Length: 160
View 1 (cartoon, helix red, strand yellow):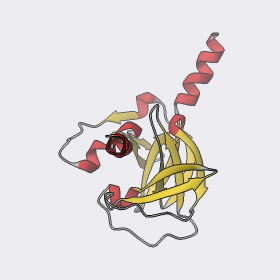
View 2 (cartoon, one colour):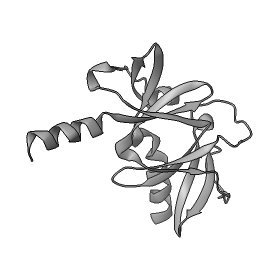
View 3 (cartoon, helix red, strand yellow):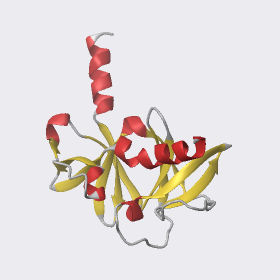
């Protein structure tokens, strides 16, 4: 790979989707984001945690859907025209993340991300990988793998 390709790859790694939950900006690395879709009908699934709203059928693929507000221990709200589902994927799983609104895609250099000392007892903190401040606005950088642990747990429960 040439130096130019490495520079382009590094720039892509620095791209983050910024979205809003409860008037706070959160960011997720674009390498995990498959697509952003409008709200679809959600089929409830029994015995899931309350923040897992159920499943959607997206082009013949069944995807579990999580309400980010509820997962972060915030009050749920009625969905509106700005509410959307961000489909994210890591090596193992796909999940839909319901957010209040998508804001923008921005470049966040690694040196602009301050690491947090995550306290595993506090579920909200477990998802925060770091914090960045750009243009006097703070973005919480989310850890995709921590967010998706519930899907792995669900799959393990199904396969046992």
